[in-house]
Length: 201
Image (cartoon, rainbow, N blue to C red; front, side, top):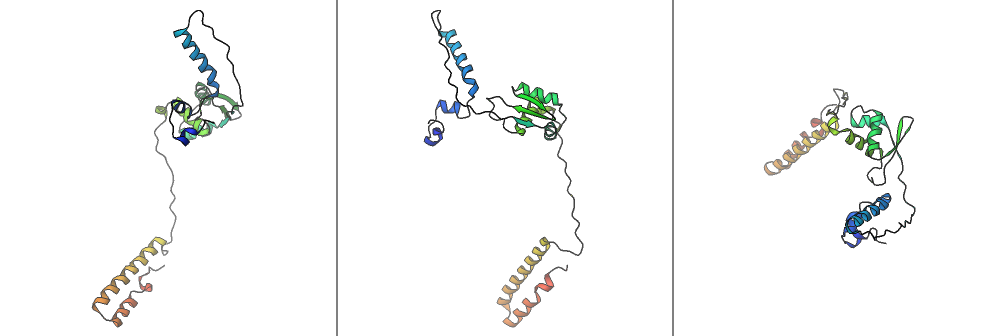
């Protein structure tokens, strides 16, 4: 009922600020235990009693496992990283890692909503490994030159030739109408025709 109404109604609240970015479903019990411990340490007395935790479990969305290819990790980072180092970096982030053949099957923790695709885990591996350890190598690519016969003209050259013809015809028309008669105008336009202006192919 309440979810998604902050944007619809334009109401900002502390709850929206905390929960609109995602809520860890596995962190509710830890939060209750931590808040209760603080309350007992600050306000508790020997007579204070803490009741049992009542937990209503619903159907929570499962975090799907993602396959991470070590070869792709090395290719995207641009340096050699041992598979054990990859597993160690992901384990430090509380991810569950299972080795299957040549791939790593990684399940992110419930509070990491930003880990969804293979590239997300590769970025985390690079971050934990240290960006300062990634060599700064400029990208290298090959650009083959297409062989064009000497007698062939490109579309670019053809467009420029047609543009020059258009400019000559406009200029000759303007000058002719001002200074010369109609018979001479036709002769000038005939001389500036396409067969003379187009480059030979």
